[in-house]
Image (cartoon, rainbow, N blue to C red; front, side, top):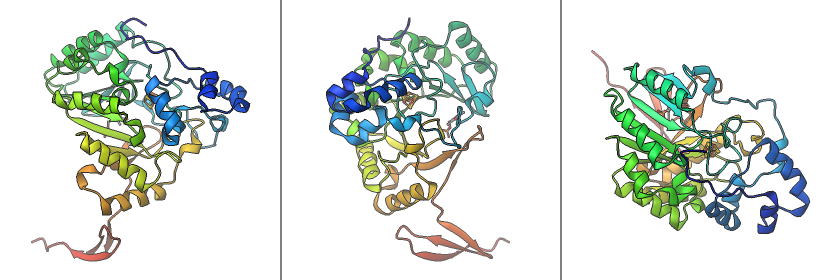
Length: 348
Ligand SMILES: *Cc1c(COP(=O)(O)O)cnc(C)c1O
Ligand code: SF4
């Protein structure tokens, strides 16, 4: 895998049994699960899993993954529906997603790209060239979003080359990376990597994290290095049953992120990935959690709760709703759940 830092050796199901993260009796069925859906966790997340069920459930395979439900989809967010060239998803006019690699440092059991992630190396050079050519020739693209897989498994040298190319395109005002690396493999956030990210004048980093117990001292230090370098930081979190589906758990996470200078950006309703049904909550459950948080937390710490509409139709906020219409009048719900009348001024 040219161009990548070496990944850590993969764990086996026997390692999980040795750690007490899986029962001996489950070893055979978990081996079967990992044939369908790759397993990888870093030493940091192996240790965090041993100390926290909320972390372990995200990374340790479970027999529930063999259960397929009628609503499960192979491409739950429709990446394939909007691919002008391989490796590029262009769904919204002003921004594209560039899938620079399919590899990750960890494979999350709920991943919405679980059918495509894996250790197949980075986007081949000719496909990367074609994708960069498309971006260069499409002035409507204001923002290039690097994702994967995880873009930060690429070497600083390769990331530098990519950032330099994007910085040459005057219409690309922003480069955004979506990554789990600062949390799950914090030692990758090196001076060389940070220098590479800063080759574009406006690089935003969106950190994927789902539970405060993932934010180990090493992860916190890595996030601080990014913030100290002046990179604006956002977070994205997936709402996951049995991991973070309570207001208290998410409050701890969002408070920890704000302290780390990371603005919670999105709380994703769990996608319809195959074999991940046991992680899904209902939308009313998610709305109730968001309503509870609105009543008790700073607005700076609150993300937008969004659904990626299956089929590639886009992401939209899904509430809760604070506003209902009653004839010419509005009813607004306050953070304590009480309703109030509100009338728009007359337009003349
Ligand atoms: C999520 C997504 C984006 C980014 O959406 P934002 O709302 O700007 O964060 C862009 N393109 C595609 C295809 C996406 O799925
Ligand atoms: S790091 Fe992201 S892309 Fe990789 S398995 Fe986890 S959720 Fe999926």
